[in-house]
Image 1 (cartoon, rainbow, N blue to C red):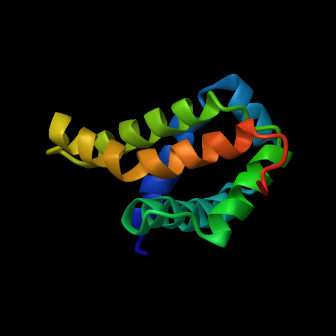
Image 2 (cartoon, rainbow, N blue to C red):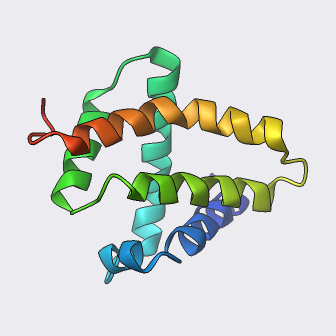
Length: 123
């Protein structure tokens, strides 16, 4: 991806890490490395929307997030940060665009939330 795409992902983290509880989970995290992981994660979430079923990688991501102490409500903060970032970078961002972003990511986010709520994320 080009530099403007990387700017988007860095801006996402600026928006996401405003939440103190979430920022605490990212202490000593290499944000440039995290940007790469976010790009791959977004692909997995959109893939779930397109294909209609989770990949092994999405299952792995759920387990990683569970093991890192991510709480279910943090996905709401994540989605809001994503929407805020999209609006920041898209001059034509409107309610229809917002809805499209929500539709594309909602199934994968719901799946991640479900997996975090289970005692064993491999279920």
